[in-house]
Amino acid sequence: MVTTTIKHVAILVVLCGGLALGANEAQQNLEQEKQTLMREVEQTQARIGQMRVEAMEHEAMAKQLAAEAARLELQMHQEVARRKRNLERAGAEIKVDQMFAEVEQLEKHGHLDEAHNLHAKAKSMAKILHVQRQEQEEQDLHRAELEIDELREQSRIAEREGRIEEAKQAWRRADQLAKEVHRHLAVREQHAEMEHMHARLEKMGQAMEKAEREGRERALDELREEAEAIERAIHERERNLEMEHMEQEIHSLLEHAEQAERQDRGDKADELRQEAGHIKERLSDMIRERRDVDEDKDEDEDEDEDEDWDDDDDDRDDEDWDDEDEDEDDDEDWDDEDEDDDEDDESSRGELNDLREQIAGIRELMEEILERLE
Image (tube, rainbow, N blue to C red; front, top):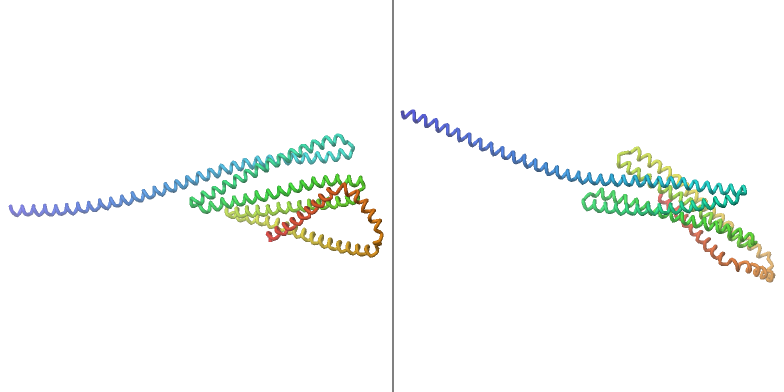
């Protein structure tokens, strides 16, 4: 009996020990599962946080892209409208030119009244087109200035938010647009000066006709000299504007080449650079040709001055200096004519000197362009 009881007790002890070991192992497994679950929860939370950050970044980028798309769409519509207006204005300008050509034909065939009416109509249309062109230029300049300010502000915001590359790109675009505005203003100023010179040349033509009718030979010679100087200045300005346009085209092509290269379009970039190189060669040839012509003119002027001095010396050797009465009479005759034209002559000389200074400035500008290209 006692033995049986001991056996039962032993069995219970063994069973209790086994149960205790099993419970302990289960507890350990449970702790491990808890730790694993906590790690998974932490990892999941971290992933969720990362996804939220990425979502916010994508949302900001999406907003930025949407704003950029809207800006480009608006810019596209404005550009299309601007080009449409330019085409319409160009068609009207062609029509005006045709009307002026028709006026010349009518005058040649003796239809003076009809020519006069058509000339007045063409002149009125040309004035309207000129005003429209000026208004459009002012609108374009105002829009460009607003875009420059907007790009500057975008650059500052991007820099504050740590988007350095984007800030640099926006600032570069603003700088380039500002340069284009500056070049446009310079070209417009040159066009205005050319219009002034054309108007002055027309008035001088009328003055030359009057001087010829009145037999004022010396005044006619001076007017003719000034008219030739104005024509040379106009030609210089036209060539200068042409070279300025070529230089702008070179810069534009090189900028588009850089953009194509950033977009991994190497073939297009090479094509644009090659085209820019051809224009650069033509521009360099034009500048060198003009420089050679100017040097030849300077040499011819020096030779003419030497010949004039030699002729003056010969005349002084052969001249009878005692015949002073004749000279006084001649001076009195010339004084009678000069009294009427003193103010015009002084004004003409002043404008002639201004034109010579302008031509010298244009030559310096051509030299500067050539240096930049080299």
